[in-house]
Picture 1: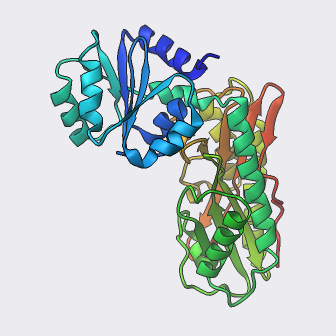
Picture 2: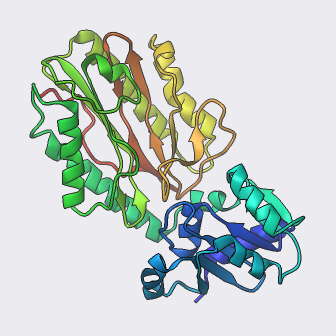
Length: 355
């Protein structure tokens, strides 16, 4: 069998006149070798003939049991020294991820002098398009996330705190097979719902509050990312109207997600509609982003996006309106771009639910 991910990467390296590469980003390492260690717990080295995973004994048994196609395992605590010993036996340039921190670059540059070439998003660009295995995992993560939302609606009530809701989401997801959260969950109620990134607090949910929850969890190494806003009691006509504007804007954005669509125009589909309804100044963040091994992958959908989206990309669509002193709404789905149009993977209901 052939390691197609490695084949594709080597072809891209050749186009960039790069003979070797050292990979330290944990998500890129996972993509190439299925290594799940944390940032700084090893590296992957690619030479013209071999691919090496260099890490320590904590991970040896797990990695060896997977028998990853074509990957040679090196167990050591001296990750970069071992990498340098391998690379110093080769010729040509050594690519590295341009996103690494300066301290790590200094170490690598001392060990592999005068050969390093920074590469921007070389591996990340391959990660944009998901294969069938990745889509299957994300589909399952989205299914769990959607089911969790519907489950907690049966329990949320006046007097419960935002942290109570956060804990309910966590417990439900873990009990039903999720690995771990992919980011710190957002639970913001009442006036706090106008905070786009409002962490859960001990604030109690009151009658008439809007409640925005934004959460994502990993399943088989791939994440979901979903936001829903609901009400506990009647939130009033103004917020109900703003909710309908967000819902319609998101629908327009999702319908714009087709193969080879401009990311900028996908973002504009929602942004322009919200502005036309008079809420433009209350919507300040990007319209969405790709998800996968990481919670935020390329492309990022915003007015500055210069990338087109393609089939087998999975992107969020998450417009919002945030009215200071009143409340806010965000609705977010995970969307698979296909040759036949967009497929929404997060199935939880989106019409305004008033508990």
